[in-house]
Image 1 (cartoon, rainbow, N blue to C red):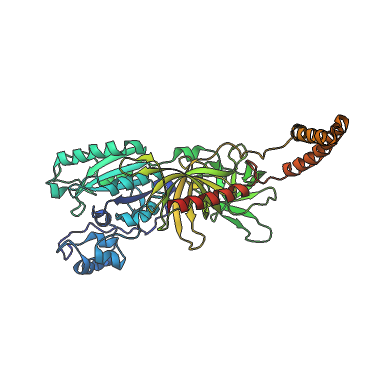
Image 2 (image 1 turned 180 degrees about the horizontal axis):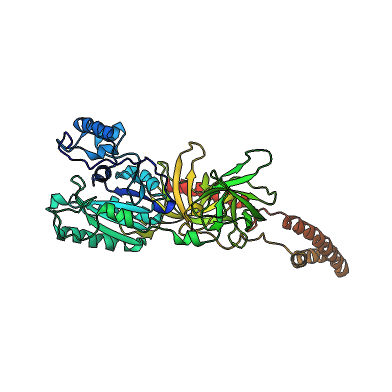
Length: 533
């Protein structure tokens, strides 16, 4: 029995970061509106699961006396909220990660803030998560921030959701209240494409339905929260079964005679002897060895960090992607993406940002703003700009070809961030929704015959006035014809040379250099800005 009156389960020694196979690891986050009880839920879950060391409990007791908001009891939120400002205000500001394990599974949990101004931190926690525990205060119901977090979770392809209806004690553990909230949330979340939504009534402070089934809600027959987290299937069968895709993170030169290409396999599997292709260049080769810290492997699959050596000497660097030889994937210069804007400064169309996607970096520009999301209806609408916490669909162009795919196909090669090149702050988090499968349009070519026809027709028409004026001034029809004919032949030759010269320049053509287009766009934007002012 603890000194504050709470009995703690028997302590089992659990490593902070267990060495387990990826299939037994679950990454999840808690999110929802402010004061819905996210930190309390995680703290109580860690307590009831027996993963809080004894010395940490002693610290929790003293912290609860100083910062606690639960009276004489332990304030379990303090197990997660570590910043002084968080403890003083009783809120979550930064993302807090905790690692724990049971006999059935290991977990990495991200406790994310509920305040709207910290939405960027919630998105950070959701990136890479397999499941979202979305809390709802049983008294308050579905709030705008609940909708926003749900949309961001769906946008980031968090496939599974637990709707944790918390503080059931404050509504008398009423079943009708719970079922009404669940029905409303399922209706709201229907367009977001979650693979599963599991609703659980909770009283996180007292531990009801966290690890043990609540005796105060006998009408609930579903799983406890921990029971569901231990058994939910979050395997990514599509990525595991696809063809090889390995973004190169590092060129490993451990000695003069060794050259390996290190990275984590984003999709598929690889074995020695497999034919591969390196993008964006398209060079081909074969895998010679699969090297790891524990020795060479006969094969490796999605999620494993490996170093590949090749039978050929190829020019490969960080940011390149090694794919199976038969993979139709290729590099792009332009994509359509959905952005969550995270910068206090609004989006500036045409501005150069640094884009980071996979292991590659480049310069990117937002060339078009298509639509913005209404967070209340989840429907797209007209977009006049993109402010902090805004979500919009945009067109992005890159200064060099990048290997990208749709985010729903591959998180590693479909997720991106935009970084301000001056302040180095993260301006936006995004995901590719269309990868511009069509190849870049080729530069327009001016055929020799077309140039000659243009010169002839223009000069013949333009020489009519020369013929008429010469005839009027000289009164001699033959002399006027000679003058006009000479002009036609000489000007056709000059016009043809002039046309061929400009045909050889890519400037201003579709698919060629966009210098002229960019200058024109900048001028139009400036004029538009002055008009609005």
